[in-house]
Length: 304
Image (tube, rainbow, N blue to C red; front, side):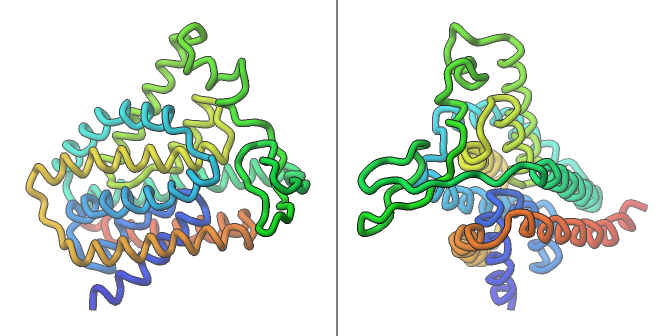
């Protein structure tokens, strides 16, 4: 019975991850608690496994498109391990009802962040596309000629921040251009993301993407792809700490859930190319708010 619920639930979360590039994993804990009847602490631990593996699958798609910056992503993830460890230890000492209440607040914050991002993009012009001659790489290095030698339309955007001299990213990764403020900004962002992952068992993509854009000067496509690498590292470190504490997991159920989420991720990438990103974001934001309100209605009475 539970496996029959886990499959569509995993597909839904995978669809949101594939279509939006992040944010969908925040639904994993409520699904595990309210639909699959797991205890909150076990649910946040199982979520780390699901989120980490699903993020790796999504990252593979972005990697093939050239939207992952491995050096920066690994460094950002490693810097977040300390925060991940602290968040994991802190989560174990929190009452289940309080943990779910704080998680509902986190979902509302994520919904607000997605609304702000949607509004900031609504006034931007659509990217310009032009065909790429057969056999030649696209100007941004992220696409390929179409099958049979046909030209494929590619987005003409600014080159990625990592490739532009004089940008924040270029300065940060070259010792001569590093500043104390940039080091502190990156360390603080990475530690905060790790703390969030360890405490709540979420990927934190809605935090990582803005951090990579604002702290490291990434373009959005590279930030989304690289965030999945960071999520994988943080999830793995937090999961290792929790498993060392003797947390018991329903491995067959989590395995089915994870496979469904991976399948949903692949389908979500197809949906993203056909449906307006603005509509997808609006629908997902509404779902987040609904789940957050439901979680609050169930968890707040337990605090009294």
